[in-house]
Length: 267
Length: 91
Image 1 (tube, each protein chain N blue to C red):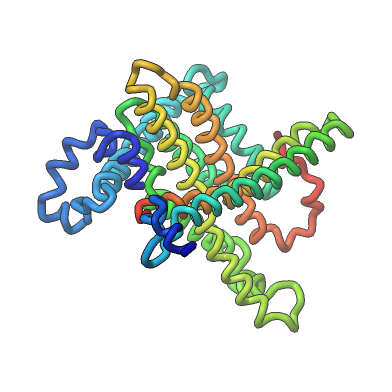
Image 2 (tube, rainbow over the protein chains, first blue to last red):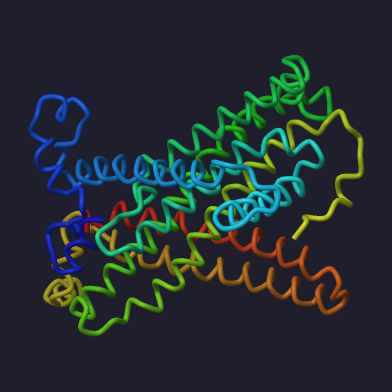
């Protein structure tokens, strides 16, 4: 990361609106306890700004939801209509993977999609930075998804079927299958977080390098890449939600022997 | 004599002593990862377009599956890119 930042023409990563706040915090006692003063590869600044920007994204989503649900019109208009359309799309998506019981998991999966999409898009605004550009944020999302999948599996199917799932289909291969299934189970949050981190970090670094190559705002060659980054941000949030709902669906729809292969994805 | 000639070339300064070929390894590795990723994604898109041409009504479902498949294949290329980011500073 250091060579890319040096090649981009500066020792410092670009300043965001929270950089003055970070410079005040990093030398205080609790700043050092959290680790914000780590100057190796500018990690302290990235971590602090990731926390601030993710809290800003969460506040933005809460405010939008509060505005939309103040009075429930039967014929929605404005912000409520927009959010109802988004919730309808997400419900179709989740139902495509889990089936009719997908409505129980829609709160968590829908929130994950909107939150990740907001955080990814934030990197395109001039003095902001995506919190998902740091491995810390995406690893946190991966760990939370992992915990939620296990929690939903235990709550909705019971502890014994959940443990029996680890033994696989063929009973006499159970010792081998347990190891394979547990390793696979831990590989899922790892791949989710690395995928999101790599894609968004790569996009933002390319935009920053193009910005420096075009001498700032004189030759705007970063504009086509920013248009692609909007699509890429949406795609990464979509993939994260699809895979999380797939993992929940694999664990929860065992006892219902319906023909889930025939269900449409609802696109 | 040949090794003396090789050692006199300026490029030997980067690869002398401990024979550090990290830069070449990262570049070749990323090239192989991108090559394999492109092949896999090409096959995925080819299969998807052929399936849509056989049955245009299923176009929406097939497009959804194609997008998910492409993102999963691309993840493996991203893993190699992350290694280049992590170790590129040690060059």
